[in-house]
Length: 344
Image (cartoon, rainbow, N blue to C red; front, side):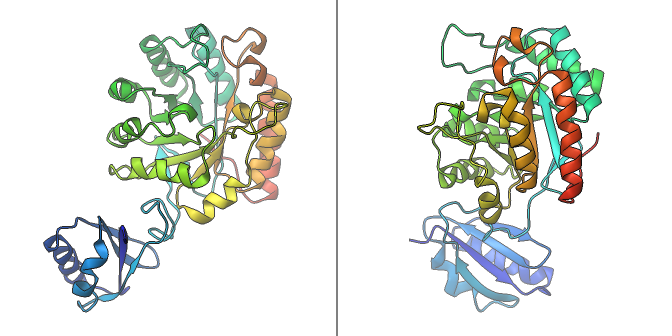
């Protein structure tokens, strides 16, 4: 049974013709979604069997055709929206012409650690600050973040440096609190199929970064994004962070092929997290450069003033000097592939 349909309008369709189509769709019990674009005008229809209204709209003035959407994910797919989405996070754009770098510590440990890192990554060229206030950990005895105190420190670091903040939210109950402090909400790999959380962040009114689940297929990942977009939030950035395989030499297996694949299937921006993907700081730079060359829209990199003393993910965190070197290398590769780095 068809679950989604696109009503394609003539490029010169008038406002009254479009409104007439919207009214007909509503009369048949469906809520239309107007989809203006550079090359076409379309109306999306979702529901249990939207094809049932096809015969009622194909003959209307201004309508070219009405076609089913074949992919299981609807609103995040290229069929639904051919043009790429650009997500703006407090002035930082993902999916446009520039390559955006997010950097910061895995976990917010204290004020001096966070502020020193924020200043260092900004000086090197990062345009957003990452930092975990709430940390989902495999072991219940590991450091799990400062919670609300960590959110306050992130807000202070933003005020001091001007860097927008992205941080993880773990439960639907925490969404409102985290959204009050963060410019972007992160849904981590362990929550990639926590559908209640996905719907909650979709209703929060803030851009969302959705990491790929530990063992998610690309289709499952895009269906998770569909939960967020289905709540009316189109500002979603996908993050490839490696998947679990048989290989134990690295923390995860970084699936860089997912970058061009997702770009062909979805209009959403996609970035790469080489820190969590590899688990080794000496592998972060090579994979970061490969991500840029492979068409990613940005990176999220972990940086710490003293990685050997970090309370979380020290082995994969770069020093300030290493991050500065990486940014220089990214600029050179960006120039070569005509993808300049975003600047704050």
